[in-house]
Structures are given as structure tokens and as C-alpha cells.
Image (cartoon, rainbow, N blue to C red; front, top):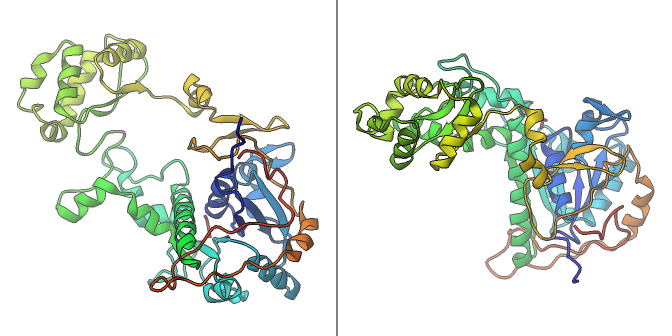
Length: 414
């Protein structure tokens, strides 16, 4: 059988990320087979202090830093900065999520990074980006959720605003950063040159506001939380049954007709209040009462069985433990177990060339002894851009020298 080639084999990534957004970007690249070197200060990444803990090690840190090598550098020292400069010359990608200006003051502004290695793809994740009136402000997930308007449309019907239950303010820019890195590496394959990528947590959340933003830009209607229900379509939300609630997602007229027939109320399709999706959205409270009255005699599982047989999208409202233990999660391998028994989450994609094994996150400074070997490698050569392509981003380089632990197998905050 032909051995699978790692999707990002030969790509070396310097991960200076802290806590969540930067490390998540690095982990995505590591899961795709890149040689990712996590660089921490001597005191370690703050994420190492977040529980719960498994055998004394942060599970949060382990989740975000698997499949990486780990070294420590004191970037406030001349020696630490010399070492980083040497690694930059011998790498393909650099990730950082310091506040804008921090890495600049340490002697590594974007221009300096690209001077050291014109083929480098450097990505900076920050709260508000490197431009604009808030560019120098620190940010955490909560701050950008609040500033982006996301909280203003989350929460019980009519408000007050609430934070989304996971750190989307970090997760979204971490994913955007990984996407941008892959695009820049592809561009570099044609131009021979790298580039600096500016990713903002604030921008990331604004960009996913989808229909909420369109309503704000194009109408004068109030934009406020609608609980677990969609603000435009109905019935599109959670509904009570005899025991447990169910989720129902109907966003077109044929599906509504199927739902009405399945529940024994075909007359709903002729009701002026419910005739179209727009009308149903305007009268969603009245429709919810009708629908819950029809569901009151059925248990959750009975209601799901009836609606599913009619082709209506629906399902249970599970808690996190139920979801993680669900047969679908098991079939997809979403909960993985590392060699020492540590349970962790898989990534959200299935692609030939991603890693099929999992190397635990490194201990602090675990691979410091490999630095000298990395620095003995030749620097990455610069391939001049073809006419008209100057300044574009660059080719996937070959990472020579010593491989990281596990290499060769199949493959924020600010």
C-alpha cells in the first residue's frame, strides 16, 4: 500500500502563539503534518495554568498544542533574539498573537522578519489588528464578542445580551489565520516570496454576523436576541414536547408543509399567518404556541421519529457530555485518546495527508536540545518573483535537518 504523504510535510512553523488563537492556528497546521515548533518564554505559556488538569498538566494546553515540538526562548535577551532570528531564517511560517507592537519592540517587526527570510509567511493575530483607532488595545474573547455586536444578538428572547458559550473571539481568527497561511504558501509557490498577514479578532467576528449584519445594513428593524429561535425563519428553534425539547429547522415552504402534515395540521399551510417563510417569521410566537400544542402529546423521541420520517430536519437538544458520547461522534472519531490515556478532541476535517497519530503537547522546553541542530541547517533560499509578482506570498519549503518528534508518520487572546 502506498504510504500517505503528509499534507504539509516539509513546512516548518514557528509558533509563538499564546493561550488560544495562535496555538489553535499552529495546531491546525500540525495536524496537517507541518513541523510546528512551539516557542515559549521560560515561564511558559499562560495556557499551561488553565484546568482541568490531567496528571498535573493542563488539558487546555494539551488540546491546543499536540503534534508540536516545544522550546523555550527568552526574547528579552540578546541570545534569545539571535536564536529566534536564526530559526526564522530556516522556517516557512511564523505565528504570533501578541498585542500589536510587542514583537516589533523585541526587534522583529514584519519588515525585519521578511528581511531575515523573504520567503517567510508571518501571521499576526491581535484584538483589533495593526490599523485603526483600537489597534493598540488589548483584547480577550469577551471584549471582542461585546464589541462586535455578537453578544447583542445572543441571549434570551429580547435580551439581555450574553456571551456565546465558547471563545469564538479566539477560535474564528485562529481558523482564519490557518486559512490565510495556506493561501500564502500556495501563492509563494508561484512567486517565491512570503508576506505578513494581519488577522484581527474583531474583524473575524464581524465577518461571521451573516444575516444579522445584512439586516442591520439594509433595514431599520430592531436587531436583538431571539433566544434559540431564528430571527427571520420559523419554525426554526427549540420547542417543548411532553418531556424534553427538540430542535426543528424549517426554512422553506415545502418543509413547512411536510411538518404540518406530519403533525396532523395540514390547515397550517393555508393560514395567512403561516403561508410563507416571511409570514411565519413575523408570527413566530403564534406559530410556536401552535407547534408546541401539537407536540405536547409526544415525547422528544416520538416527535423526532415522526418529523424525521417526513424529512423535516430535527434533533434532540443534547448537553456536552451527551454529544461527546453520541454514536455519531464515536463513528467520526471526534474524541481521541492519546498514548497515556488522555482524552482529547479531533480536528474538524477528514483529509488525506492529515496526521492519524497524536503526539502529546511537549513539556516546557522539552526539545531545547534540538535547537542547535536546527540552526546548523542552511538558511531557506529566496527564489526571485517572476515579473509582476513582486510582494506576493511563497513556496512551501523543504524542512531539512532533524525532524521533530513524531515527524514522518501519517499525517487569543492577546
